[in-house]
Length: 204
Image (tube, rainbow, N blue to C red; front, side, top):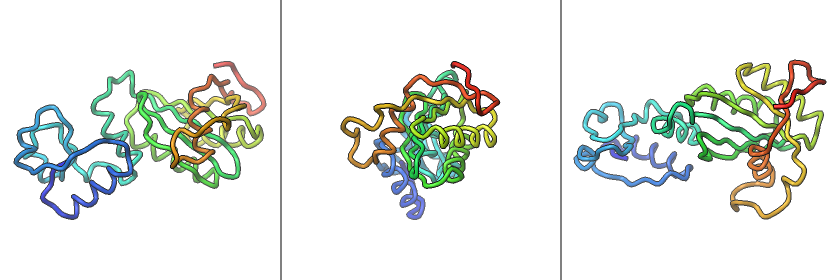
């Protein structure tokens, strides 16, 4: 990252620290000599950057979405697939992957909150496809969530996944909750595609 704007510097650093992206701060003169590397700066300063410039004004304030926006510039179109795992319950866990990279894990207390977060991800990250997998630990909640996602995001493929065993084992990261870790495991399990009728499923 490179900027002479103190406000932009704070905004960039605070968001990057909430991702697992490695970064260094360099001067604009050093950034002008960079070739092929991503540099986050301001729109006014981007013309002075020699690498792949990202204007902070064009990036989401949501660190998870921002990470996806940055990665999208370096992924082949066929790899721009958003994969989402959801663990239903009183606290709903959600894990988001993009092109094989983890963007982040989240927790919400409502279906509408979940759909809102998912909509933000789908709307702001360039993608070739979106696959959402919902765990079936609470079948009624799973179908309700899956149907709500389909209503709000009809282009998204939604599958119901057998989540038995997803809550077992050691957690991958100390900062992640049990719900979030279950969502990570659900994302990579084979599911059954939700049909247009809530009572019917088709094998994916």
